[in-house]
Image 1: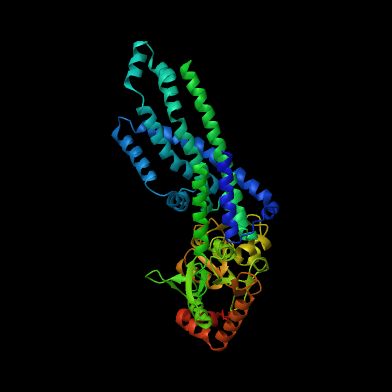
Image 2 (image 1 turned 90 degrees about the vertical axis):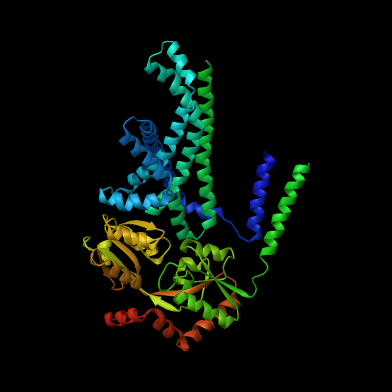
Length: 240
Length: 263
């Protein structure tokens, strides 16, 4: 483990020296306030999007099994269109065309909504996969135990699906954090936008981006640790 | 042990490649520019670099007896590319500023320009003074002199910065921003393409900006050669040829408005 870390650091160190680049991270200190605000903004956007996209994903996953064809097709079209187009295109399209047409002028809320819509389509597929992965026997057992449909959901479907989709959900949440960087194109002042602006001020592009990469990693790494913990907890409940 | 050895070998391999790849640039002049600023830096229909700066770069290469390679690089990435040796020179309509001079060396100026405003015609902005207010929103392109001007002189207003010129124009057209600060020529052209939504305020509100070519500090020999090239190119009427080729109509308009020309 230690060897791997040393190897990576050594490799980057040599690369930096090969091109005769002198990094000076002290140049970042005057901008700490802006980096901090950017970090907070990224955190807030990510958490906001997590909530909204879970909701969207859940609705889309359920309506895909809906018996009313019209609703099912809407949901299917949504998932396919969103998953089939780049986020950058969606940001420009929804912000400048749909957003303007319907008077959504706050770029922060618009940003959270666009990001949620994008991630929601992926979450819908994750949830749908989780529900479908539950074996038929489990429901038969629940039925034979005399559980009502609410009880079946409470004690069988929900914990099973949750423990199965948690790893994928955590991965998706990491994606939300990283994808939020694209909102910089509509001037949402999050981490990446801050980095670009600071780079325009101090011309220390590499120091800025390396530092910001580290901040993003800090966020995504805490997500994976949290998800490990939750996974273990839910497995424990299942065994009990 | 075997594993560590193989890691080491991979390491050496990468190392030697990087060293080897750096050695064959002696007779090339790599010029960095952002091909997103017509008619100074843009692409022709086939996607080849075209424009004032491109012609200038080739003329410079001819003068120096070097083969010119043009690298298309994002505006934000131009100075870092110079710092890391990816390009030898930047010729990208770059204004000489104090901030930039701390990290790069500039040649003598080869052109001059003025900032102007593209305003939304419902915004009620008639001059630069109208913009320095709390409820004003300004769109600028990241890292440009418009950005520097807005963040240092228009401190009361909200400044939103974008990666592309078109995003800034879009903000003004849709009324999300009151004004976009950029150079006169671009503002004039953008106003022409959105006449019903925007107004151009072309009257200069600060001193002229000087454009220079940038290179890595310490390359004094190349700097001297480039300075004498610019002087010679000016004296020989090279810029008149370029104006005629790319900017004839614009020159007429600038002359009729009484604005100073670029060269």
